[in-house]
Every structure is written in structure tokens, then in C-alpha cells.
Image: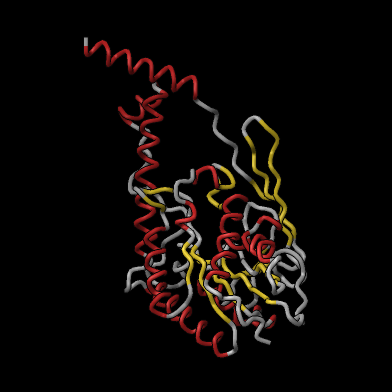
Length: 341
């Protein structure tokens, strides 16, 4: 009786798996580009002025979603901000990688754009520059700050940290790429491979197990980037402390925004361990720091990404981030006394 029930259950699971099986989703693709190789060896790449890129996201059973990104004449995303500082206007510069630039969302959907809109009704007018560049590590972010962004005399600099920022090119133990391989292959040979070919249910179970192992391995790799002896993390700490001191000396405030990787691993996110380390360092260094991960608690993070095959945050996640940052800046009184010039 027990064996019969087990067999019936497996048959039922197989029927459900076959009925609910979906065809593979087509991969997103880009039309055009937004960044080019930089002649500056510290920057290595930079946004191309006046560039435009269309990202095409295939949608199951519907038309493709097309997202357009524009780079202005100064090499920043979104509307042009005049280099001359307007009297009485607080100027905020947002720096970071693709998660600040807003890969996969429209110009007005990025968290810097949301931040500006959310603060728009404040007593002091605010303008936010999106200085994010796809693929930047921490070394490039702070080089861009020194070489380009400070020319705009921002009153407040927001560093949008992402968990692979310490994977600095040329630094030892910086193999923490965005897509880390799992510790073992997604096995499709031998008896297991045969079973997966015959059974949609077995294939679904094996795929889920492989994905879970890959994400846990990925989280461990990201966390290891922030070991005390990791060269990239050493460089990043020095850059953060140095930028904080230089900005304070010129009357500019620096804050760090910890942007989560919206991929679950174990009971948290892939980025959680890195966030704890960076948050602790900022506390010791006296740098105001907001960790956004709690803002995504109890949310289906899989639904907040731009596409099943693109792990960047989508419009709703950017909205949450921008509004949370605006509220935090007000609560911490970090906008008071600005503009300083």
C-alpha cells in the first residue's frame, strides 16, 4: 500500500511537471552601447557622451519589453546638470556601477531619479546626478569621483555599493564576479543524466538543487572578497576613508548606500555577508551608511529583477531604494546645512 501510494505520488508529480513545464525563456539582448574604453588607465572604461542603448527583454507570451538608456553630453545618465552650481540647490552625485546607472530600467526609473523626485518637495531644492557606470569596481568609482565628478562641486556624494565592488582588477583574490560557477557541474551525464532526460519531475528537482548549491557557493565567494586580508577590500577601505576625508575637507558629505543583490541564498541574500562587513567598517570610519536589504524583507525578490535571465534590479526595486534613501537622508539630517556653497 505504501509503495503504491509512493508510486502514485511520483506519477502525479511527473504529470504536474509535464503540464507546467515552460519553454526556455529567450535571452535579453542589447542594441547599441553606452560605454567605451577610456584613455585614462585608472578609469579603463567610461560612459560615452550622447550614447543611447536599447535593452530588449523577451517576455513569455507577450511583446518584448524595450528599455532605453541615454547618456548626456557630459557622460552621465539622464538630463544634463549644468556645471555651474545653482544658488540654493543641493547637488547630489550618485556613484556606482550598473546598479546605480540602472541597467535594465529607464532613465526616470533609476534610484537616483527616484531620489530626486522624492526630495523634490523638500524645503531645499535638490538635483541628483547619476554618475554610475556599468561594470565599475570600487577603484574606478573613486577615480571617477576625483577626475570628473568633483568638477560639479556636489554637496553630497552617495556611493552606491554593490557586493562585487572589491573585485578590483589586478588585486589578489578578486575573482568575485557577478556570475560565479557552482562548485560542481549541473550533472547531465550517466544515470542521473538519463533520468533527467526521461523525467521532467526529476529534471526539475535536480535543477533546483543545483541552483541552490550554486547560489550558496556564490554567496560564499562574495563574502570572501571582504576577508581582512583580501587585497581588493584593503584597497577599497583605503579609498573609502581617503574619499571621506577629502570630501569633508571641502565641505562635501559622503554616504554609502548598500544595494542588495536580489538573489536568495540560504536564509538571506547573496550580498548579506558583504553588507555586514562594509556596514561595520563605515560605522568605525564615521561614514553614514544605509543598508537597503531590510527594505526588501518579506518580498519576492525574484519578481523584483528586470528579467529571469538578468539579475539587475527592476523599476520597483529602484523605487524602493530611492524612496528609502530619501527618507533616511531626512531622518539622519544629512541634508541640513546644505548647500555648503
